Image 1 (tube, rainbow, N blue to C red):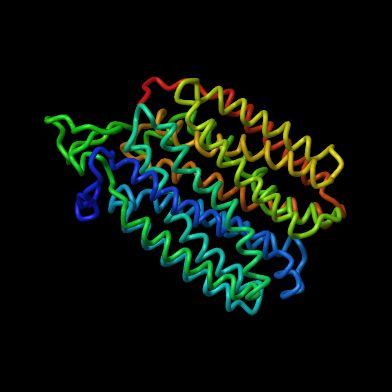
Image 2: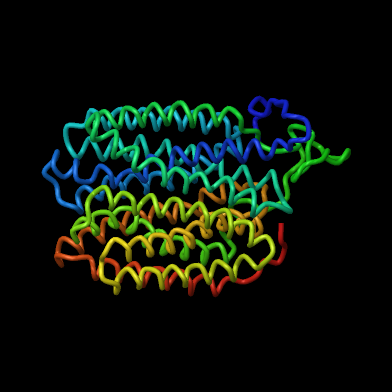
Length: 417
């Protein structure tokens, strides 16, 4: 049940469909939340020096944060379906800011794990998953484009925040940098969440714009499956497996690409630039591929994207590790990964409908939490044991290949929503 008090009508400029304001708000929220968490590589060297820790131990702070982020998304999605996304998103902004402020005071790795897990992880999950699910309800014909534009925020955040975090660390130290990031989380995500409205019919509108049908009852059930019905669908679990395997490989990149570069003589500043390249190319992928899949089959496109990501990681494994080669890799990986991120919630809406869309996306994204937990941590352990990243990257290639196979096995839905 959606709480009516969370859906007060807001005026929009004449001729502007309020759905695009939703898209802009989700863009800003996802840019900030994702940009902050993907700034983690900027702090790896500082954490190693501060706490005298190894690469695997430091990587675990990121892994546990991402794990809790996506595991929280399930509960956050359910709460947003019941109470509305505005309250859930604003609470997430408060919690994320508190976690970053706590991390700034950490005197041990244990406290850092708690701050990143309970603060950044829980807060980020409450911000991201309900907001992404919300966009799917506001559009139908242009759902892929709208979703792609909204989730472009994660790419822009990944472009902008890591260099900002590096600059802040050089100017203020890593503790001061975390305090600035806490202010960003509270200010930007908190303000964005206040613009969210649970469904277009709450404003007398239909998806994609125009007035709602006169017969539409604001309390009527939104078409789609319940969570229990979704969990009985075999294609949900194949999509879940594909998402889990791909997430493990994706987060190997976000945690270990910069340390890999510095291990091979590339400066830390140039290494951070690789994360920014992932961000800007991911933005291109979200926009271009997110709109393109409105006109082609999403399931087959997703299979091809996973296969392309496996080939890209094979490039990383086999090409000599110079900056130019890694930049090309980051650009190719980012475009494909961006398309995948834009496509996944759209495909979820198409298969399972909007009735419990935030809850279902949250359930699906728990797979990302599991992948984020074991992917970077296991890669760091393999690197520490083997003295290099060859087998860690090979593990990522195998995971992406497995994701492509799972996606290939998914059946077409009996009903498209």
